[in-house]
Image (cartoon, rainbow, N blue to C red; front, side, top):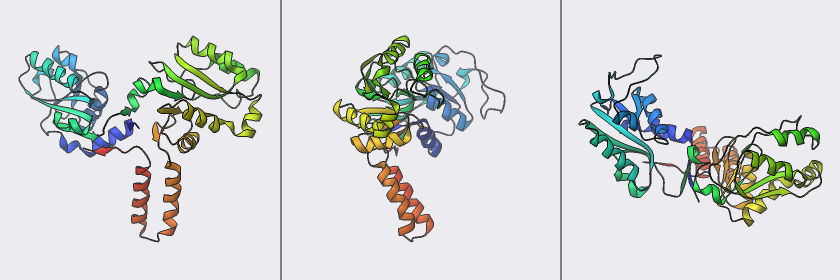
Length: 326
């Protein structure tokens, strides 16, 4: 089971624990690429200048907008007296140590504080500042399509790998065939996808395979619905049952689904997590049931409204992958 952090969760965690960052930090230095995500969030919250580690070591030029004045003005990067060295997470700690060594080898003599936005419990003391404590394995919104779990995952097609067809295009005929041949790509995983599990019909297999090849999307197996028509698929409600069955049979560890309603149904039916692309949230098994129970509690508890709302929020939070503060 993967722990999961979205952009929104990361931003909330940083904003809620800005007090962890030493007040005299005057430069935020990110470790590319992923470390730039929290680095820029921190820099914007604190109104500090942000640069990447290579620019700092090379003592490169400073660039920033002119909409608002920075809290700390620097004429050169090396003028900073206290920098915050930021990465998105720590696994082994080697990236942070390499970056820290590079800063010292560059001749910088000022103070350096280290920050990993997300840490495993065992690495919490490896850095000076952290915002989220989450054990491995874990998945982040910014690496979800490039993580090793892709190779043992099921992927929906429309709304994930390509855009969804419009109602006009989705005629189960010539317009739909034109859409399949020319659909605009959406997300492109950099690793080989384990299984593509789509509610498209088998009669469109060749068009689908040709599109995947044209866009260099590598995959293990393509699973389509073996029914004669869109109308029959709708009549049988085959969208989710097809996806649930294959999620179970393939023993995949993750399902990437475009639609929130289907994501909830797949998670409940399979007993496994589903990453919903619509809002980039992790839907956990039983989440829909917890949400319904929480809603009914507002009517049954007859407690003060604030208490009832707090209970609802607590239950909804527990239905998704937990993200704990440091």
